[in-house]
Image (cartoon, rainbow, N blue to C red; front, side, top):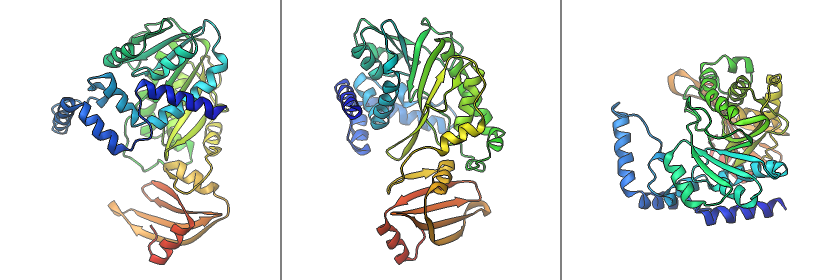
Length: 371
């Protein structure tokens, strides 16, 4: 039944204009064809940003048509489908007549359209801060129970809709990029919480959760699929949500590994309660239930967690290397049951784990190269 539902959603999203089962090169060519003039403007903007003469604007702000916007989503098609499926499966039992649902960061409105189409008894709002996204969403979906509203929920503007019973967000938050790896692989939550990055991340996401809380009824639900890389993301997100009046549900949150990339399904209730302990948050990472198989890649703290969880590990060869700025790294190649691994960890704090086939392990050993 679950696979059938996922297939139905994939078919719906395909008809909506999202492209599945095409490689990045194909999508890039298609996007550049549909955004010829915009691509030149984007290239010019990047040049000006590099010169310090302009502020960065996301590619999402430049798309000239709904079709081009859906091509942009198509670069993340598998993640969008999996995230939407997980969110919908979780909220489906709650969708009773009169329930109000808001899709935060709806972009062209694919998930909102699915919800409105399949639940005419509910009222669905698609919310996005990009005025073009709202324009395109209205162009693509015309249903009596669906409305699309522009709202920059990262800003100071109050919610433009009445409070809803359920909020959802599939990839609706874009996190900033951080290049300081010195603490990222720590399993010491106290150290993580005290890091400058964790403090900045908490301050970054606090406005989102504050505004979302204003848009949700007491005891309402929020389900968000977020791009994450580390346990520090969870710590800062949960801290920001707690400050805004949300309770994090560790038991019904999960890690999603999609196409080798990590995403987090996080579930919150709109009520204040005791914040979950760091141990509970860490346990939700360590019990991530991502079955190891050849071809998977993990980095940062999840690399450490998965590596430590591998059963019957046997390191066959290690190589110690000097890297930039006087740091060192150790590369270990080995086997764990019927899969192989390459595990790298450096004094910068960075770690990565590649799971490979046994034949690949043998090839590395024959070559005398650790990675």
